[in-house]
Amino acid sequence: MAKIDLTKVSEAEFSEGQKIYSDVIARYYGDPDFKAKMDKDPTGTLKAAGMKLPEGVTVKLLVNTAEKIHIVLPNV
Image (cartoon, rainbow, N blue to C red; front, side):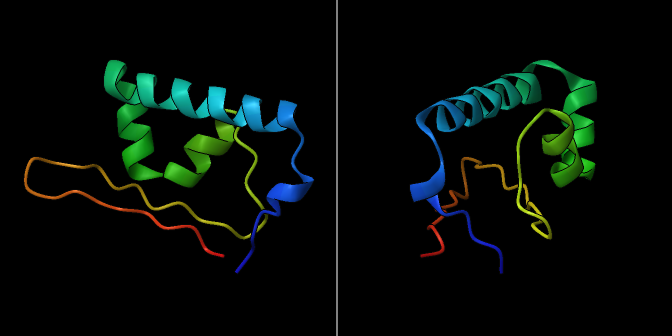
């Protein structure tokens, strides 16, 4: 499985990734068309939004609900 070596990510790259991530969350809840794309193809939608993902990585979208909370742990 591909890993991102955070020791090789510049502060600017990290900040840009965080900005894209924040924008994606806002669009997911504010734009029904974007939400539909994200639900159908999260990997492609994130790449189209400008997020850099390592080759071969896929994204699984999980949304917390009142009945279920997801905890995501890093692959170290």
